[in-house]
Image (cartoon, rainbow, N blue to C red):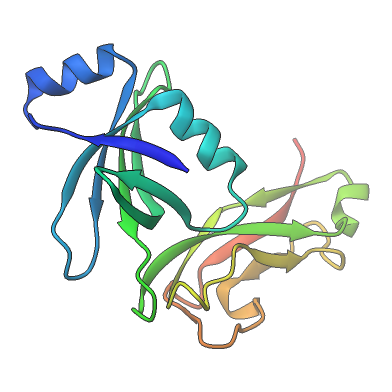
Length: 178
């Protein structure tokens, strides 16, 4: 379980001091909950997020335990180091929006014809409860050739989950390699 601290100062000076000490700044929020300004050890946070098996993961801040989902993060434009992360509390039986990763399955025919798979939407926005939200959306690409594309409308519907992206949005395609 990832453990963090409550930030006493939310100003620029306090934030810089925490970053110097190796902390990652985080905002934790949820529907009907008061926002928490927290900080996590950066290395522990990265290790936890990379090794998580589900969309949500447990954290402990100021003796409060909760499951959270990463909603957004901000990285330094040059170094790529994480600067800030927004975590939303995954409340049971509350319908809300989540960003679910897209995973390809199979080998596309177009790969043998000198093509590449281009994932234009690595995460799809869905509306559901945390219990019904899948950990990933699997898209079968075995029958795709160069020039083919899968759109949101082509993805199999999931029970109790609504895709909020437009139907005409391209999720992935097989493009010709240059």
